[in-house]
Length: 384
Image (tube, one colour):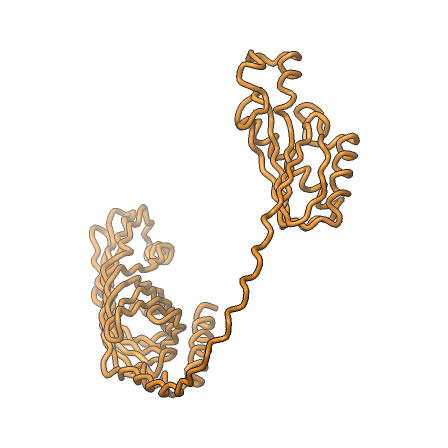
């Protein structure tokens, strides 16, 4: 599936290359070369190693793997345009290995070095003038050199097998061009290789590097602008009168007592509260407004987090009711909670911190829902 998707991506990008303009072909075609370096990672099949030892009469007690190494590649290619290129190069994926301890007592150590050459088709998708994403798919011809050694009861028959074999490879990456001649690449690639003892595996190379481009034609200069038409002097017409300034927006704020809309510490609108909101919704019909802001307030009793959640839920409830009842577009109405941050009562008007019926009644003005309407033509609003 992965290799099929990579082939599909490159085929699509190659199709784009065939419809690119002649000007783009002339500006972007040319040779390039570069160098990448980074980390290579191999997939070592420990179960296969253990099964092989088991067939020879050994039980594997532990396996330690060396799966990562330094890898690099040098490459060159020809870019037909901004969308398609053919590329070949030399790669060295490094060295990987394992050590397996066995019973009867002994150990088996194996190492593999992988290097070779490749030939790829590269498709690119430009994103702006300097950045592009690319995918590649191609063939690698890898030289795999193994080295095996045994200790104790483990003996090795062929200590140095090697094999040259062709397999597929594919990858993805991104390129940033500093200018028309030098760029930087980041990419990840997967190489399919033979391990010289009858098995196939994958090695991934994650690398960064520089690419140098040659023979790029400079963009054709823009043609000079046509000469200006002769100017015939004429008396300028009188300037039109300035348009009248737009009328300033009208703001109306209505404050609903929270106790008239909700039960204490609740966020469900009571029947009496629905009547008040219905009156307000009826007066909005025919009004020209830009936005309606609903803000819920609580008193200072309780924690900040609790009051913020309660005031926000009450504001959202009023918003939802007005949207459903008055048909107000949801994008024209906002809702938010404000805790007890803007009390109506004065600081010394309701003393005390303990929740008592007296203090709750005194702080009743602070528990409210304010509705502010901003528009060009509003009707008079009732007091609540």
